[in-house]
Image (cartoon, rainbow, N blue to C red; front, side, top):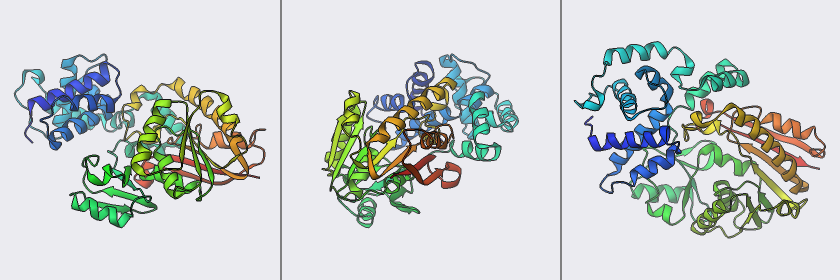
Length: 403
């Protein structure tokens, strides 16, 4: 592999933004990639994937490189050199990485790889929490799976096309895909590529959405003509899927506390040809109270630690703090107790997170069902989706019916 100096320096710049300036990895990489329009897809892929890989294994590489935070620029070069050595890449004769003790790096890697918290590169507190919550066997398998690069999965927009037609169009554009077992509208890319510049995307024929996330829409059991509330809609990945499952018939109310996310949802809805979505910003409790007892289906895609999607957001491992779990479980409980009141008698409620921790998942649901607010609700179905078993993101889903 031939190393280009400007690409390696771009990786260092991105790592500096993430580790030193505290920026989110996806934003830092996006900002770095905008810097030089001459970079082709392979160059951009090298910068993005190398940066993500070093973020993913920050603790392991830092330990091998014998560096501590806050990282200087020379520290970041040392970390990058560890990455290169472990991949068998011949190091260039650059002053920034001289000298690099290759044999010691490999020896230290072999030694540290026997210890899970170093091998999977996670903070002590998170490793202890995961093992305590899931047991050693499942946690070991899960954190290993969550450190693998995520697949690129598309969701066919059935309002505009079919899976077969989309596959054919993508193939004509040089993008090969394959179906995903158990996710009826999902297509997985055989080779990672930028799909956003393709004509089928511009025409609204698909969205990028993980296979686990796609299961939520079907799980909610929506039908055309219903009144459905997506209570934590965000930029609307699941909302758009619900609109397609409802065949654009009925009313789909998309709620969120962030108005800018709902603006993005409106833009995406136009491209998707989804006409039954009504975005409403939650700017007061009145917005929720007006909907009490009126919805056939309510989806609560609750804010969470995001531990199930670490493959997509590896920097979350370093941004998460133990006190955040206590704070977010309180928020989840408040949302579940309040938003559940929007379900009409005979309706259904889905509580969903992209976390794998029982505190955020079944403990919240069973706590709700035992409460005064949960009276009249019964658990219909529950799903734990683990990356180590599915090959996709970790998710939790609980479907409850109201008498």
